[in-house]
Amino acid sequence: MDNLLTVNHLHVEFPTRHGVLHALSDVSFAIRPGEVLGMVGESGAGKSLTGAAIIGLLEPPGRMSQGEIHLQGQRIDHLPEAQMRKIRGRHIGAIFQDPLTSLNPLFTVGQQLIETIQTHLHLSHQAARQRAIELLEATGIPAAAARIDHYPHQFSGGMRQRVVIALALAAEPQLIVADEPTTALDVSIQAQIIDLLKTLCREQDTAILLITHDMGVIADIADRVAVMYAGRLIEIGPVEQIIRHPLHPYAAGLMQSIPSIHQLSERLNQIPGSMPRLNAIPSGCAFHPRCAQKMPVCSQQLPRLISPQPKHQVACWLHDEVAP
Image (cartoon, rainbow, N blue to C red; front, side):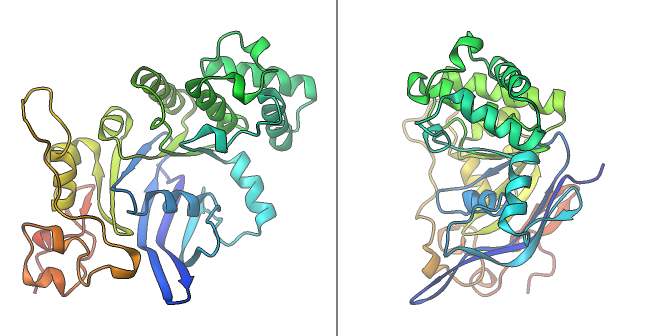
């Protein structure tokens, strides 16, 4: 099956008065139609920046300095903003953590949905309104025909997030970039949103890049997992392999920090130290100051992304046979 999205050697940098900060370095991955790729890592790892680069919403002065992004074989990272806007609505949908940042408080949810639908699908107002109602119903909004004329503040947080998902689906995109879509919601609403995303993949063959720090969500919905650290992709592979048998010490630390219902413990496992700042990323493997398994080479040379197992890649000297 051909890849829907291909990201090749993505670099994102932020010029400052004190020099250039490298926020993403050499990030490469692909997503197939109908696949959910979960992207995990601590705050500052580069997850959200990766999503923003894909949908063309990097905040200035942030910029792509190297790399290419292809959607259905077409390169999209170098397109003018007017063209990218059409792709962003029609072919790529976006769901963000806080629905209030995605909804205009001055317009009803119906007005916002109808405008999006008519922009990309060229339907009449009546047909667009009917589709908007169907989208609200599909995302679990009760009495959608009446609530379509309500304003965002008249919805609860969970219902607003459903409206945002409806907006993301309005033009039937092939790819959805979902950045922490369930973080601000209570557990029962989280489960409903996750079920909705799984239904999308199954019924519409929609691909999803799911950016989150919640490994429970990843285990429930993702097909593969990409682990980010200090702006680099350090491990990527099938979800079961990475949850049960992670290869990178950082990924192993993330998995061990998940509380278990089968094992009582007074303290949660944690990874010592913290993510390095962009202006202080260590040489070699950026994780080596926090790693209990580090070797001399780890502080001297950057490990390459290799495949010690089929469909499973890791950037770690522990698994590289050519380690000096």
